[in-house]
Length: 435
Image 1 (cartoon, one colour):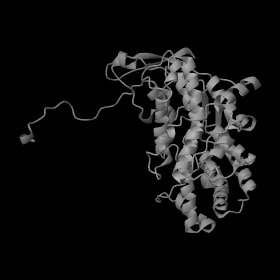
Image 2 (cartoon, one colour):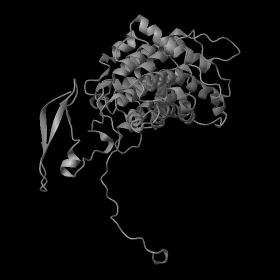
Image 3 (tube, helix red, strand yellow):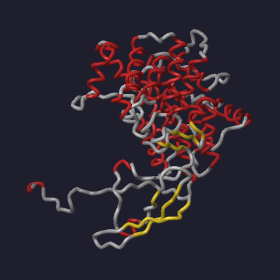
Image 4 (cartoon, helix red, strand yellow):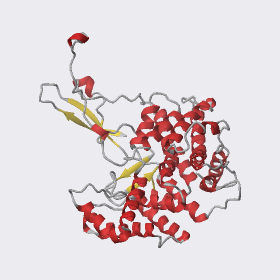
């Protein structure tokens, strides 16, 4: 981070001008350091949603929305998704580079041997209604992990932070699968150390004690790709929440629980669930035969009908993750013989229109990763209520990597956003009889 230039802010109210250093990162926009603005001028900046504010310095993930580029530690997501599995991606995000064979084996062994949760955790689930949303269960259970692992809560100790990272990555699939099993009334399935990360999760989700579960390699690979593509995505709402919670010194389990709560919002992690609901709505109205009417409503500026799963707030080009998820989508549908299933045929028809219709192409409303991942998860047998849980499982490693980076930053301070106050000024309280 260099600062060869400066920015000067001048004021028309007589306040003296103030100089600010301009920092240049390795890629991306330059950053004006305004930390001394309030002290020098008595003024704050106003940036609702922090859309023009860099809240931290990070070396983990970089997004160029105009180019449709996503890099994990400098590696393009297209190369990672093709050449790596999820645990390699976890190692990369946590440690800064790809593991060699020995490092990969050691890391996998560490994760695999931490997948079990404390047996008393099973009693937590009994406190929830069977119809509780799985995300509600997940928020509570992840936060409760801190009550079981007092031996790794010293956030100033690098070894404690590493152990906590391993535990969170390892135990999240177990907790997600337990949330699903509890909601369906089936017995919990314990993890097995002889299966891969994704295969183990699918067995815990879909296996029963009645018979041995045999993972399908194509479906396991599809789930693994979903996890890779959602592992991190820079300073989004949930990641920023994890960093803000962590800035207070909160333990990592509490911080990740805060991230899960934020992800639960429909504007963030619920996008693929909303996409499936949209497709189900079209299907209920007549399916492919009615898709023309639906598209016409989407184009009508006076209509309230929204197109879900297309376009992206950050990417102004084709979402690089969508291209990869599209490949996986067709692979899974082919493996399961679902190419002609009515709901999936509807999704593919809508995709074709969006990729060819000038209305969508000119507005760059390309299918995004949520469109395809929702279809894939439905094909895998994952209910829509679990989609955001799968997202949380994937994103946990990104959250913990970002949290660890923040704790290690010597410039880290407790988060304290400011405000533009527009309420009442000081006034006296009248006696109740005079109000």
